[in-house]
Image 1 (cartoon, rainbow, N blue to C red):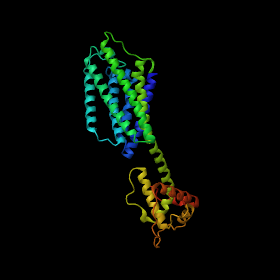
Image 2: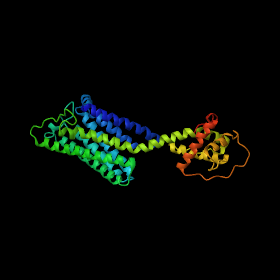
Image 3: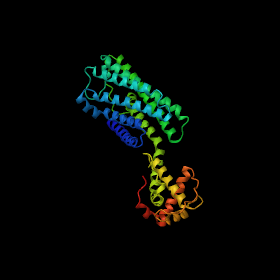
Image 4: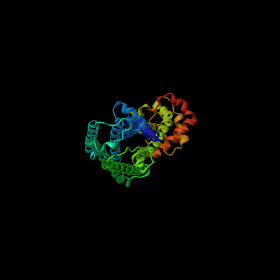
Length: 362
């Protein structure tokens, strides 16, 4: 059951992270979020019991180290992402990076300085009393994650007041995830102190993620926290995805109309084809189409069917006549509605086939 939970959450985070990485490469934004989700997914996959059994064949308890390092990288990335959302990305960025580097180095040094690490599942409860390096290991890990979680929670709490819609919902989930993470870290501190005080501490093995209170704190809460973080960081991107799909549909719809207008009025074609984002390409296509409609004599008061018929009846080759007076362009949202209506009407009056032979919208 624990393996299913850990691997399931890990693969979900990895899938979302890879998707975000592809988008970040295309749009140039959100790379930190992609790294965070991939690191979280890797941490949970490394931490599953079956994965730890395999990793221990390479080095005793290696899975525990790899998962802890990945978790700290993920916490750093999430902190940067939340700071970027709140508009405070550059504030304390160098401090966060230095703290991460120091914590990763200390954790690695303490781990490989410890003799007699167990093979299989990396549970250190029996070793804290006799291996001070493991106490330092747990202290560094817990303190770093605690400070990172507090930083994420504080930034999210401050930002949520001025946010709304999907962003507010995502930040609320991040706050809840921070609470679960702090409960996990508190339970880890208590368990470590208890193991140091006991003369013969026993291994804290769990039959299920919520079978006992210690298991809930040590296994269940981290999984719930990661799931909330993944969902909380994904929700704010949903409106952008919806807008992106609408932009893509508008681009496809404009293609025949714009192709006919650019062939008839080649001077409207922009020298700069637009930026890498779909919204920038849409703005370029709309600007060219608007200019072509103006040169064709389409005025704002003309209905969409009348404008479509006027464009359809234009000769394919440029003429010598003087262009009509320039009309005023409307706001973006209204412009989209108007151009979509004309483009639809243009297809209905037979302009689609003629337009498809020209170059598509870039």
